[in-house]
Length: 188
Image 1 (cartoon, helix red, strand yellow):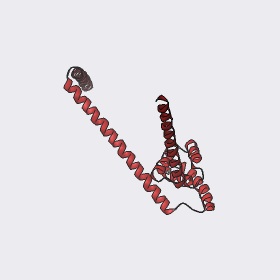
Image 2 (cartoon, one colour):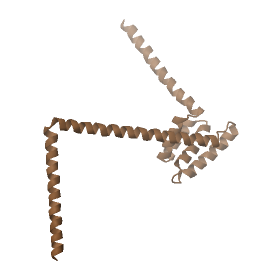
Image 3 (tube, one colour):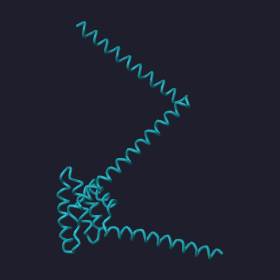
């Protein structure tokens, strides 16, 4: 009985000393933070350093993921290239969508499913509509892979859309410049 009571006393004293030490350090830290400009500068430097390291790590992770997606897509397109015949393109579309749907429910097969959906998108005549359907119906992580694949290797039918989107913007800015010149002519 005396051993357990001595043990509980030791635990109580140790706990009290730990709590007292933590409280003392918290008070010291708060005092330094409030009254010592060098301490505050050091804290800010550490926060900036941690934020920079975190940002660098996120960028590296993004680059690794982009590289992984690019390699998987290149490998998949090398083993099973996109068809050029219109009849084969239609059959390829149906097959790839079906395979993509099957693979999307299997855990760990997200990248393969995204490759299949990408291939279907590449042969589809109106990819913007299909991309909207993918956004609503495909799981988010697979859709993200599809978008990365488009960024890495844009299909020809999507490249025309991307170029088409850039031209209206240029046309709008040209129209704005023309309107501004008319306003300037009126002012003169």
